[in-house]
Image (cartoon, rainbow over all chains, first blue to last red):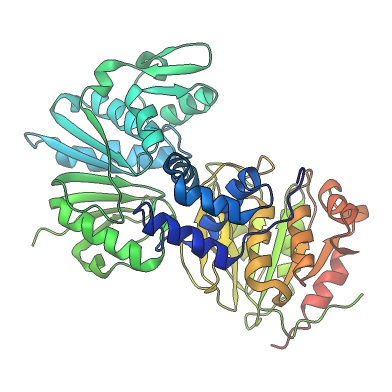
Length: 278
Length: 191
């Protein structure tokens, strides 16, 4: 079957995929928001199934390389440097100054994808003179994205936009000071990456692994249904030091989190929360 | 052509260039007690702030708000798709966001919202496509129509840019009407 696929995956078929991914491969997508997840599944089915859903499901069950590919592609990995410049401006002006007197700063980027936001943070820390005493742990479920991130190599096609974002986020220099440009990619300078550890972590099933002063998790909760959002926020609460900060995406909230009262909202627009000292 | 609003549980309106003026005209006739929630998807700048909400609010008694993650569709509200996210509807009638690649060079994409409305609401939805300079929304309307929804486009002859409604007409996805007629028909929902 070529051209426009007319085969639309049904709810039942999406459930069967989720079932295989969980029971055969141990990755749990049951708590993911269905509309977006179904879209991603549809994309892969359009490309790989040739109208034969049964064959795709079979392949997904028996071929773990394919399953891994599927898992990496079914998640949204789109990210940018200094996405939402006003947020990074708030980090620079309001959040990081509160942490600057700590002996060491620990930051967790949850759902870091290919690392663009983590590198943005490193630049910010460097410009504030805080990079050397900061340790960043950046995690994602997507092994492919993590591998890219750990090399510090980013596609250069959006660099003009990143430059603009960086400046409107209050950047002190030029973004081009921080990378080496190649034909169609850029490599982020080594000194920015030396304090970053990229590691695989599944927010759904992997638990606590350290205590942090700042957790950045932007545009991840949107892919989760309310109960999963709640359990992830609980993990964040447990993983934050007293008075630690939690930053979510512009459209996200703590409304559906059981632990919402453990936080104060410190920036309503930029979705910055602070764990209460108690 | 007439439309029946009895069974309609959601109305989605999409537009691009010229769409803002057109949508204000539609929203302006609807009362605060309008029984059907409305989803508005307009192409807008990436780092757009929420001023579009207050612009639209000036023209309507409905409460205009930017959609938030997982909020439940409620009558009396017009939900604006936020800048730089796709807006989707879940089967429990909550709204959700998706930050995946732009579609038709657009995020939010009208097609994406309409696809999810087609699969969740089917015949219990109504789609309107207004003025715009590309073809986003045409496929979406077609999918809605195939799912049993009622679909209308603004008459291209009166649209600031014709290509969006024209693209939908070319697919046979909708009937065309002047805005004045569309707003007249929308008003007849039982309030």
